[in-house]
Length: 208
Length: 328
Image 1 (cartoon, each protein chain N blue to C red):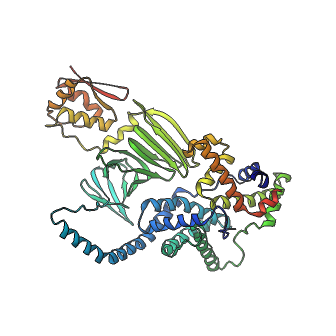
Image 2 (tube, one colour):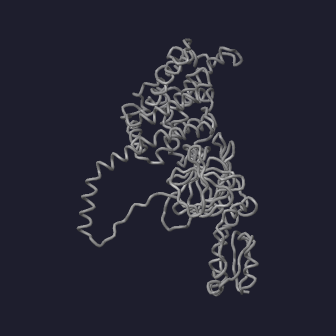
Image 3 (cartoon, each protein chain N blue to C red):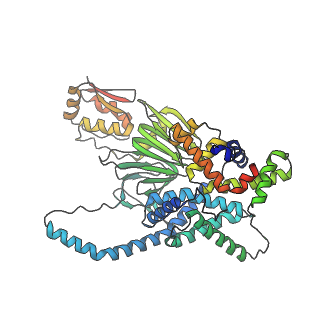
């Protein structure tokens, strides 16, 4: 799912924005650098938290990935989103790390596939909350949703979190984001659409 | 058929999002560590690219400069201004950190963007960055940026008005950034929150896509508090008093001897956030022509008002955020 850049949300427009952001960072633009650090550091961290079983390794891996990213930033051409580019480096570093540790056992967590996702969403309504099975599936849904949110433009993800997790009305969200009510509703509609697109067909099938 | 009938129903997205909960965030300490490392790795890349660009553009620039000199031989060419900050004054131990080294700083010293300033337990500093004056409280740490500062820990106070040039200024913190909108404000970073207090003008607090604006009202300051979960609260607080007194510790001493009463009152107004008002044109003219003598000693600006004006024909009253000056 991370490599599927042909979704509606992670579009060529986003790549073009990412290209501009990288150009400005390489020109020493402090504002661009700040934006990159604020937006991408937490996403990279969450990706590695979800992928690595051993949390102690995560902070080091984020640092190693960012070191490599800084050194290779000039090679970013905008042929994929900046997040995908960062994740590719992270995956490479993760692999190297596991080889270095000579840990042959799988220390990464598997990603959801479409079948598993369907089962997870169906089971959410039927399983008892206390059961280990429910807890496991909840963890899988958490993975999917958080990875999906991180692939969305940040204002989409924020709007969805404020609406569905914090329970704010569109008026309250608009006030926080500096938008009119109409613009907020439009933003929420776009965010929901992008969320569905990134989750893909599996989510559609599970809900039908 | 509408879009909604073809797509999953909205509440289902809600179920998923609520099941997952808010996204996890890294600790501020980890973020700072990563930031320092990333900056350190990126800096040589940026410098090398700049050198390359300068090399390529060098010959063109030389030709252009020659042409300019030939065409406008007597016209002075504007020079781009380097973005630097100057140290106005320090008190106690204040140092600039470079790697593992700490160098003490002193008044008059110039600092480059990217410099990290640290004040010790009894250290205070006043620096000028663009059109803004920044006061650093004790046990605080900042990084100078092109458009403001990053406050890693501790407390700072910022005020504008040093120049008419419109230039944005912001204070970034691990929990959000504060943009100045013509103002005097204070920012404090705690372990899990940032507190921004504006006593003159307005500020805008931002965290990701969330933003909230606060404007001070006459005689009262407004405090915005943002925690690690990006929850923002707002309340009215005092615009003077013990919470603000520390800023006088790093204030540049006012030279009373030979100054006009008007200059003294304008300094008091700038330091305290009280709006200076004269009851009449006559009172203002009297302040302008009255020359003061002596020195302020250990008085802070607020304490100094009445003793200094005692020897003049002026009298001060305070209220509603105003410092009102009248003839006796």
